[in-house]
Image (cartoon, rainbow, N blue to C red; front, side, top):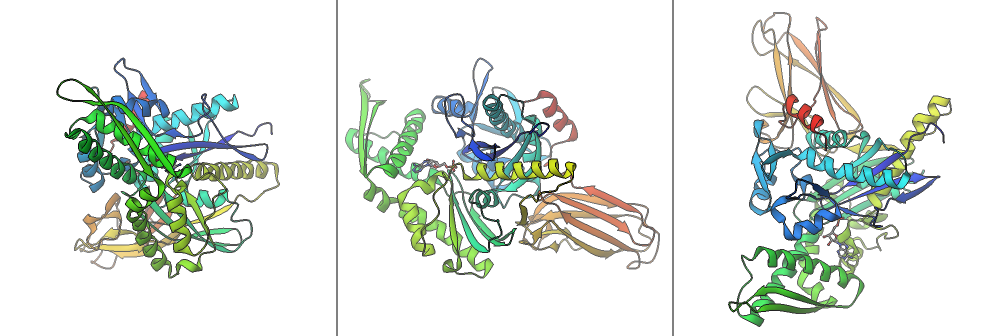
Length: 528
Ligand code: AMP
């Protein structure tokens, strides 16, 4: 394999991340120095100026929630005024501030960081883990993103990779990676559902496989539905139990509340393996006489299932939505792949089996399956590149994904004119002809949006393209040809051309998500 560079696959998750690589034809999930195969997607800034990332940061979060950043993936590529940032402002213990151009920034210990910097630190940690294990520098990676990530979020994820010193050779959708890990795509025809229930989000994707082509036929999700909901509800219940026992509330005691959330998660996970869980939380709080109080708590799997099944039920409303977009019924699905730690719960597996009328696939660890698929795709891309240089081209898995959102332009009246429909297969290209709106107009400006609202500004603005030097002429008579292209990474390129003069203006919409070129340069310089 001399000359061939190792490619790693990284699942950059909201809660956890995982890295894998193909070694001598077999996929390996890469463990860290302590043997952990999964890392928390967290970054903690310590008082002495040092920064810890991954599982170590998760420990810090318990004692120092204000200086520990988690769920950066929820905020990356978003506008400060977006719903997601507003929700985060209310519920996240760390500080989020408004930067230039309405970009959200994380402010910790008087320093401000862009979200790509935070995600970059997590990616850097995954790169370091791989390098230590492989004992060789690693520069190339395939990184996964949710199928519904828009162009800006994809671009910002790529930037995070660059900040981590990685060349992101391909961004692929998480469900597609999961399907690849199960070996789908080797000439089979099947319809599969990827049921991804993680720590904070739920996503369902319906994939159709014909020969070696994967097509995402529909995708739907709920960005605030995940394992955390179980932890939250269970910890509230524990607080209630504490109050019943000691007669006072833990509300407002941030450390006790944060500790209980971790204990609740442990109880939840234990109930996946055992029919009953018993915990003793020592010295949880103090009463007014300074006496330290413990909480002893126990719960059965059945009781847990009864108290939480409505949370699982909510995932099926999202599944209904995706199936309806695809024009399918649950029973039309040939295989159900489970992704995400929450799918380890027996309650989830049982309810999924009932909903789809078939047992889901569980052979591969649901927390590693996406990284495994990314590693397979990485090896295939590298192999393809390598062997084609030598003359014998092998086929990399051909991935056909769909665009999660419609792409279009703002019309004169402020409405939104869709050019590429949501769920169109990518890569794709559409050319439209526009005409000038005024006499002797010599330039046109197209504002490009992604989204589904009829009103342009209610969508996500990706950027704009301006074409100068148009030939003067009566309104409606000068024609401008605009080509919209979405590449295999889901990244948008728009080209405008005056049909008569041939003047062309191409814009790879290098969406900066509001960051100025200087700010990006600064992030690059600072390194992560
Ligand atoms: P992910 O985002 O895929 O890494 O999933 C993380 C979520 O999976 C967290 O909410 C974990 O508490 C949950 N999880 C991990 N292992 C288990 C388990 N054995 N049983 C139940 N939930 C689990």
